[in-house]
Length: 322
Image (cartoon, rainbow, N blue to C red; front, side, top):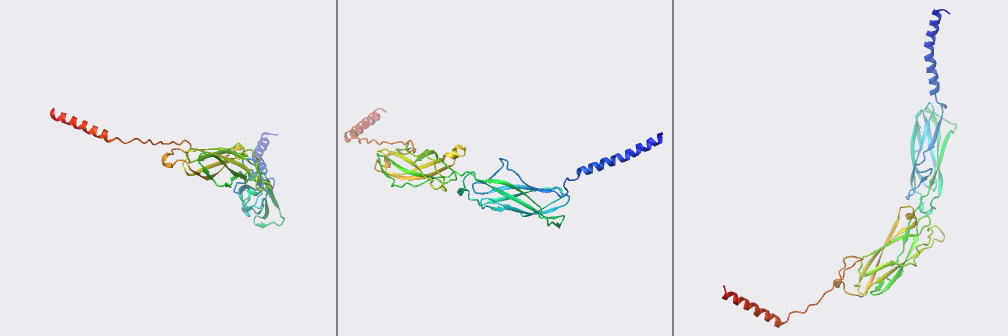
């Protein structure tokens, strides 16, 4: 092979090699499925399931990916759990080589009537209707599912007293309150806080109260109730007046989860007898100050005359000695 032939072959190689490389790259960039597309539900950040809110709603994200060479049009349907209402797109267009993210909002779930932690499936299905504007009659569809979960609701309630709350001063009395569970999981009384606006009144929770009793939710056939017994120690010097007692009770279940859900009620009692309120100054509901009045006798006439004579004598001396 002479030098001219070698030069010719080298020139051909230099021309053809870039063309071959370009063709190989173009083949690599082609989609593996020129008609491919898919639907995927996006998992929430805190786990595989979507948790409903206490209002019975949740928003779910999903995307449709079109790996094909042409635009597609799809119809979207939802199979929702817990008789929820859905608000999401029902038809969308996705461009070639693109993916679009959508949301569907579920509302109207009655979480109180469903057991906490119960889950059911949400199914989203998209059906291909057109490709590049041409109707598709094959019924090509894609779907995905995710679990939607009922949240845990903590909701105790305090009933009204069942007896008259009129008490005499100088007595130790008590009354009962009924606590029931209106959440959707087992619960019991957590902490109890009591405040009042009366002097000389001590209040406590009796140790026989059902503080450890587990209460079933109202949806249960036998939900039960816990008795909260309030002890009143009324001083004999307590003035006759109405006293408001604020009672707060926390859910033990919420306390265990670090959320501390409280309920509260105000009970009014009437204290009968005792000293008049004019004789008592109430500076603090829990640390009253009692003001005692002392009666001092008035000066006699003799002392008044003596004071007058002494004053007159002092005045006369001052006139004689200027």
